Length: 344
View 1 (tube, helix red, strand yellow):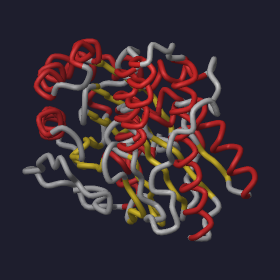
View 2 (cartoon, rainbow, N blue to C red):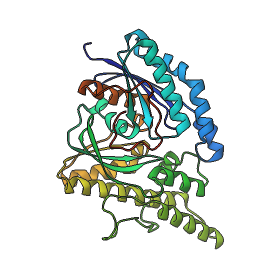
View 3 (spheres, rainbow, N blue to C red):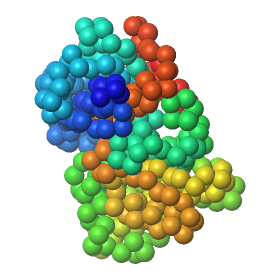
């Protein structure tokens, strides 16, 4: 009980996440989502997300406290996602966290959303080996990171130059008339398909391309043109084969570059996080390639891969332990917060 109890707030996109962590022990992880309200638009609408956060905030905090069997008076510190993310959504979380911190007279930490996706793995697998390579894949981000010290230093090795992996899943799902968000339905459909059926391109894998950057826009366009061509010719479109072939192209590039980054930097631990990290084929291929390369692979359980409050509280706990300075009371939201800025 000597370790501080950290309350985490996550509102970077469409999910209101409130988590409670003591040290590396997860006590509760309450979540409210507005996903159903965005489905008819085929993507997240920032204003709808912000209003949903306002409505869900206090009830979700109360649910997290009840699940953990603690009260607000037991909280020792508060952490909140300060960026990157949707500005309006971030502001709701930051304002709420500041209010709770002031009312409770406890320190406040504004944390980086991407670094939090790395930190959440510690709740299941213990302290992260340092240095590690982190592959973060979600609807808004596809990044390769070198993590010498999770509380002090994270270096960006590469990132997507256009569509993130999760964004490509959503857009391909729309082409195939699959539900939003596209990741889970494509994953399910792909299990019945042939990943070698269609030779979709692997972006930025040529000898002159950036070693660690990603590009999925061309792949998304290739899928759309292939489907349109089949429909124009009156040929059937196998959703299973298209899903499997598209998914294989994405995870092939992601895992190959992640393993290359480990080899190039002499690092033997890889952690994968973000919503797309829940994809079954990504997890399987990453494990296969890491085993072959002698790399230790760490992936959080699928429920902790998507945005949640637990990951924010987990990073907050590391910052408290490391003695990182607390955030100023005028902490703001930064929609483009760089990864090398772990906290504010």
